[in-house]
Amino acid sequence: MLQVQQLVKHFGGVKAVDGVSFDVAPGQCVALIGPNGAGKSTCFASIAGQYRLTGGRVLWNGQSLNGLDARARLRHGIARTFQVAQVFEALTVLQNVQLAAQAALGLQAISAFKMLDKCSLDAARGLLEQTGLQTLADRDALSLPYGAKKRLELAIALAASPALLLLDEPAAGLAEQERSSLMQLVRRLASGGMAVLYTEHNMDAVAGVADRVLVLIEGRLAAQGTFDEIARDPAVRQRYLGEGATRG
Ligand code: ADP
Ligand code: MG
Image 1 (cartoon, rainbow, N blue to C red):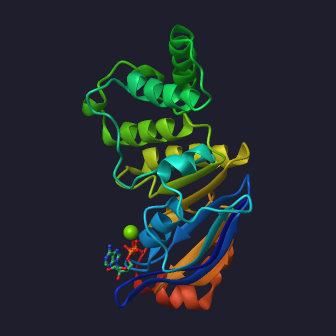
Image 2 (cartoon, rainbow, N blue to C red; image 1 turned 180 degrees about the vertical axis):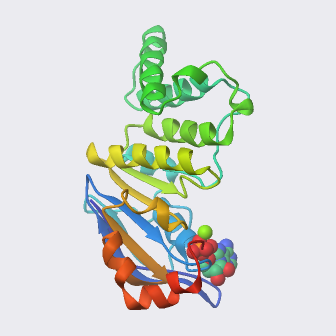
């Protein structure tokens, strides 16, 4: 279980995140939404280990993550993706995922390299199937359409068999149909037992996907609940939805 306790991150005088607390349990898909400048990215990056916290704690299975870098977090079963997809563009789709699978297997200290290659190939093919990328296996990552690149980044994150998956705007920049199919994949990952936390600025990507929605406004949680609950919340309607904004 992920526990975020009184998370505070200030940049000089800017109180980007100012006392945010919530939990994400295994099997839960939780969305962090809010208007532009609300502190979503800062909150996300603080949980993912990019920033030194101004205050508060982030716990995973009861253990503090403060001070652990991304590699150490991966060893604890925590993987993340970026808002702008990051993949090895000089490699093929399959090679990208194979490399990630190989790194994950390496964490278990396997020394028979031939065996490792075979294992990582099987693992990589499985991941491509899971993320709907089989037919693009031999394409250079450089030449991929953006939607496929987002899927590839997800496949790379999944290679570590994470128990907690952190996604920064997983559907950003995608057309409607791609967006919805990617978010259904994210939904299935949570249903399979993973804890999933993602940021999103489009309300549509939250309905039918997130079990719980956290609404961040000016660095604080203004509301949380199911999509229907937060959509009815007067403060949220006035300060977020009412601003004519599905974007933030
Ligand atoms: P969101 O992702 O919800 O749009 P951000 O977390 O990016 O919001 O930003 C929240 C606030 O923190 C904004 O006022 C932003 O200008 C400020 N901020 C974010 N990152 C930095 C940074 N690295 N240095 C200084 N101020 C920052
Ligand atoms: Mg942001």
